[in-house]
Length: 152
Image (cartoon, rainbow, N blue to C red; front, side):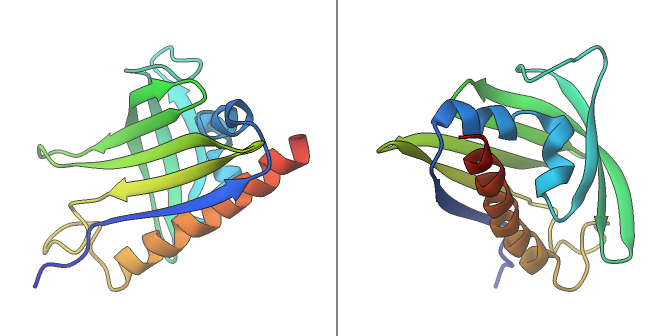
């Protein structure tokens, strides 16, 4: 039986989609909401979200610390911000934030597709890794909700 490698979570936010999108697409602020990302910074001349923009994320999970490159793959203001974390192989991990209008506010959905999770020999493979990521996206979107609603 294959292990899970994808998950998503959604939350309603009392803030306009543009406000929520501005938060999730500012990769330099991801360390404020993510329980795993400590900080992130734009690289290679990138100064903000745009398709093809490069950044580096610095992460910590339990005893493990690492940094990883990221590339923005989808960037539609007020609606979608997505990026991939390329690996040496052709396999990449994909993170996606989708924002939609919901009455006077919005709904934020964060999802991930992490095909290297629970694969033998992968550095991303350790006991409970999927469950850790699954729980982390719920915490991340809850923190974004708090930040967005404090601005509205």
